[in-house]
Length: 432
Image (cartoon, rainbow, N blue to C red; front, side, top):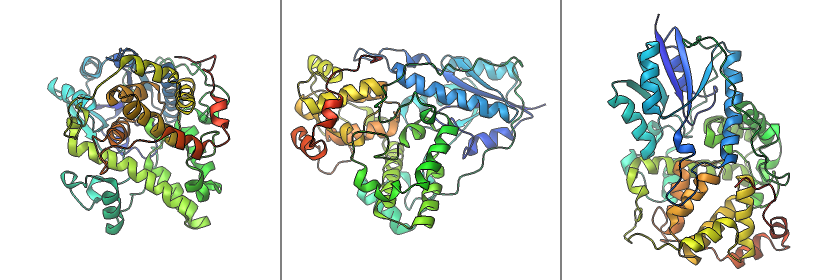
């Protein structure tokens, strides 16, 4: 009897998970594993844990949903604690697994995890499946990727490259070779953000599970919201101003190809619009940073990034005021308080607060990137790194740095002060 092992990473779904389908056909028995690693509670060099309680809580709702979905198909999801290089080789030998299947993630730490497994003598089949477009369908090789997004987008659109259709979820899954006792489901009773959160993850509709993701994407694209997306996407308050797809995309509870299939169905019913095009535009940005990570690798994690300047200056006291929402600038502080209380921040406010840290407070962009990694429930390693480098003028920005004037931003996007009033003080339940 053959045994396979599938290691879930940032792909906590059954729908459009080709690597999982291959693993399910690779053995009579299939061990499905997710690892909570020591990195989650490790302290960063900047003095805070890599994962906030809210980020862990959102992930745990995704795991609970995945566990239920796997069980309904005859399989078992085993949630374990430990580093991949310590847990997986021993587990594979214990159950007699010939190989490990997983998704490929184009970032240094994630690449090193797979390399360590191979160094331990394991065969690892890591599959690319996190982008909208397949790398083979791009009009250029990864090492010829344009250095700026506009050139990338134009080349893709001229070529007619299109996302492949998502693959269905498996109807059934092989049984687990591990002991039959049911593994304990991850707790979903973590910290809850306030009711005014733009992504209220404490509500079942905003849990991290694939079921919640698919219900949301169905609801959103059945509505008229995509038509007005371009006009509303810079909103700051409420759940309706943007697609809110990013938290599920970050966990992999939703694949970008599934989201795009719903976008296509919406356009077939309602017609294409500026708003629906802009959703495609934003999904392409996400792809760009993934392929950009493949092209540049570890160079994106240097202090100077891709730029000529040396290591940036840093003011620890100013950084601490920034992350506490106590800079003295009401608009910036409102954004930082929302982030701390909810684990979410609009795209507009992310740009404003990041620019303020780098260009007004003269702090190290890497500290800001680490704080976003800790706080954001939709943290995505490629997009986070790419966006911080972009704003700091050390990445894919032809202007070499983007400063957002916080006074003008407040006047343009919060003219009545409603957002500043909403987050005028730290929320009493801040889980920080």
